[in-house]
Image 1 (cartoon, rainbow, N blue to C red):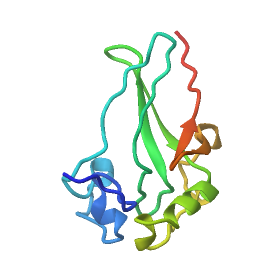
Image 2 (image 1 turned 90 degrees about the vertical axis):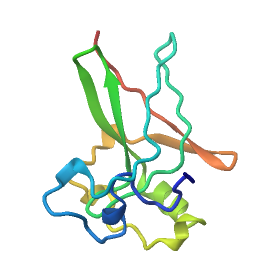
Image 3 (image 1 turned 135 degrees about the horizontal axis):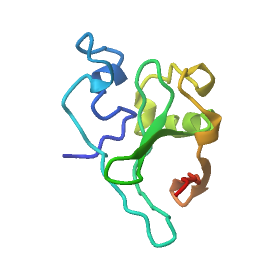
Image 4 (image 1 turned 90 degrees about the horizontal axis):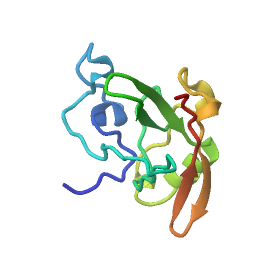
Length: 138
């Protein structure tokens, strides 16, 4: 399957296009298509490196990445990572994202957005490098 680089959100493509999806599905997704999902193990220093494409968005939400830190077999920390609106605006102004209608929800209008989990992003080569430290008590 070709990578989806159009600002669509894996599992929520219908909602990403603004066409909704089956009623009552909630966070279960709007369709069966899944891509760009996986797991990454940290190194001895607790650092994980992930290479991906810029994420999509769906109606009512700002651009974000879901992240889960597995603490043990039965305990996990689940969060969402965000981007500054200015960075997302720059990315979505470029091809191939520019073919999609503009984002409707910015960070300040997203009821789940938390500044504390906004990535520090810098341009690197033809892409971006996003960094964040997630502290977990042992």
